[in-house]
Length: 219
Image (tube, rainbow, N blue to C red; front, top):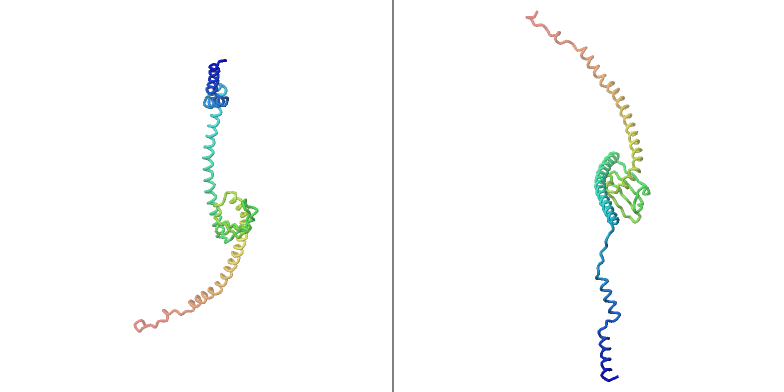
């Protein structure tokens, strides 16, 4: 081989090594092509119908949710109004009877069990805890579940208190009726005697008109 041919061969080899991309570069180029390429998805007719049915079901569910939410809002407002009116009426009764109630904490759905629970005559539910903490609020401000539990516990006891008050009032009425009867007899005995004396005095009083002396002209 001539020296010129050897030089040309080496030169071509070096040129080929500089221009031919490496395996790593080919991989990077292929990866870029895969990332930037877009492959559209075509749905069959059955898949399109199924997707349409799902969309209709979701829309129907959303309509039902909106309707039920509106009804729920109305019911909650009505429930809150009834609770307030009921608790106010109960407070009026408690004030009139001047009575409060101890309620077993186990009967109430509390997150933390209280040591003592009292419904006072002002209609406030007071919760006493172990560490000395006391929570107090108007009964209607508690959750409906707690209000219901309080009413279930209080109503039987309130019935007993009202019956006891009725018996006390009945005894007082009997006492007043007996005293009224006795005092009426006293009135008859005292006032009636005075009237009889006045009547007797009127009957025995001389007729002064008949006793007027006659003048000489009248003789």
